[in-house]
Length: 459
Image (cartoon, rainbow, N blue to C red; front, side, top):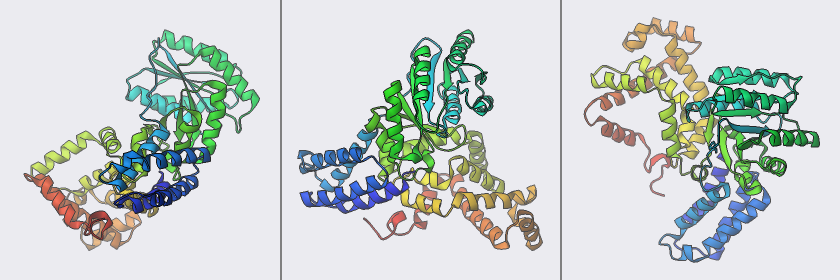
């Protein structure tokens, strides 16, 4: 996410970060590069112009001249303006109304609207402990109704049935009556999408909006469409008075034009980002964290939240108890750790949230580390007998041939896995001893090149 923009901005800002003082010349030079980076990220031209002017004004003003470290202060100004461009803080859903709180979902066909309804339903149920009902008012695509029913069953929320013969307004009103009778907290109303904005579509959704008076009207838009996402959102906002935006496919958007343009063009906050296909892949949008991530400063808060939600606490506690008792770290434990990392989105997803690790995350992603190596390692471990997994020393030549034939791999792949397991086993032994975590961290530090992950000494 934002890979190309992060790469370009990091290079642009590196030249000015070490400056002892800022002059009109070096500010101008850096801003020219920043401007190009934003335009290449498909950020709308008026947004880029406004951003560059604001940064220039602050950089050449009193704020920087009084600073002890002007170069770093310049980077801070860029971060603050990036954050301001996307909104100062996360804009939470407004559900403070007499139940049911009605949320209307709008958007073009193919943006991931119906999938987002399912994700949002899951989010409201699990994170906000709300009872949720969903209904489809898309009478043009019968598959959309069936899709929403499947998603509702998958995430465990109430589904109100509808059919292509009904009128959207009648469907929504019946769903509201049902939600009241069932004491439902939130009703999500999915609407029809079109391939392009047309008068008939706008007239229909305006009529539906007026009839049900939703407390939230969310526009679902594909992040991959760049600044076009902001233009489409603006057209919908003029017809509907949106309260917020959900950016879908944000995990696949390496440019970031939509995230940086939507708020500035529509004046409406991005409330959520879709970060994958799974029902749990919906994240609240935090402008400060995104700005930090774009500038390669990481996003540790999101990483911690993700770990709390996705890591299996019972397995972690079981492993900790096992290590404290001095019992070894076997291949079943190793497989569990691989699965936990996969749940966290893999190594690249974790690395990009750590300060200064954006480039390493990019390299891991390009090398397809998670999808190939992790999957292969898991397959090899699954091809072993329970006894071999618990005691890898049993694995001799004939067993190696059987395991590699069963997993469709080579002997060297198995040898590499066993070597990596032994290294992790040594680290886990250190964790199990008193003060072991500090020793393990020192050991990991010794494995790093001089000057940390970047190498080459201090920067």
